[in-house]
Structures are given as C-alpha cells and as structure tokens.
Length: 194
Image (cartoon, rainbow, N blue to C red):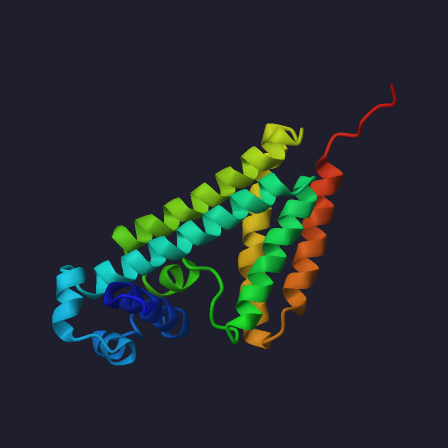
C-alpha cells in the first residue's frame, strides 16, 4: 500500500533536513521530492515548514527512544545494551549512505534559536539520558555514576556519528561502542562470592 501524502512529506523532510539542515531545506524541495501538491502541505501542516520539520523530528525521536528502551530491556547486561544501541545507530548511518544519524543533531546545529524545534531537541536528549540512567541504575550502578555515564554515552554517540559521517566509515562508532560498553561494565558493582 502506498504511503499517504502526509507520511511521505514527513519522510522526505527528514531526509532533506539530515542532508542540508533546517535552513538549507526549502518548502519547494520538500514538495518537489515528495510529489505533494502545495495545498496538501498547508492542509496537513498549517504551520508550514517549521510544523513539518517538527513532526519529522518528533517521529525520529520516537523511533530512537523506543530502540534505546528495547535494547536496554532486552539485553542481559547494560553494557551489551549500550553496545547494541551504538551498533544500531552505526548500521542506520551506513545503510542510509551516511545521511541518517541522530534525528535532533541537524536541528540543533542549524537552528539554535529558541523555538518549538529547539525545545523538542532538548527534551529528546534529556529523555535519552534519563532512559540510560534508569537502565544503568537498575543494573546496580550508583545513581550519580549512572548520570555521569549517561552523559558520556550520549556525547560519545553524537560525536561518533559526526566522525563516522565525515569519514563515511562506521569504524569510529565501532570504537565508541566498545569503549562505552567497557566503561559501563567497569562501573557495575562486583558480585561477592556467597
């Protein structure tokens, strides 16, 4: 079944924003590449480009958040979960031709002014850190250490995505995955023999 016009505009917008940033993406490009008539844009997104980018960003954030929760829940160890999450990001980046990485990074880097978009990006980063803190905390890592590690994990992943995209090679993310997993593993409390 063909995607509806609204979803196709959202997907097209996400791709363009990842390639060109918020300011480098025009409504004309979105309409041309999505094949949507101009009237559809304002029917589905009365707020125009910002509303469309906002929805594309929200959808990208929801996907990343769900994946992060799943890998932390499904992995037997939080170090394995962190490794799996970074590896999933690396594969997504590579499989997209080094276009799709973090759904909020292109917005943050291109549109720093205070706006609904900036707020969505800030909340997404905070939510990802909180999901990580909860996963690390539930594995017995002391809360303060879990908070610090969560910050390092997000920073490592974001920096790794930029480096991998610049090099068009996921090797930096492979290194990030292993180092972060090692840090998480070493932060876990040692079990004492019974």
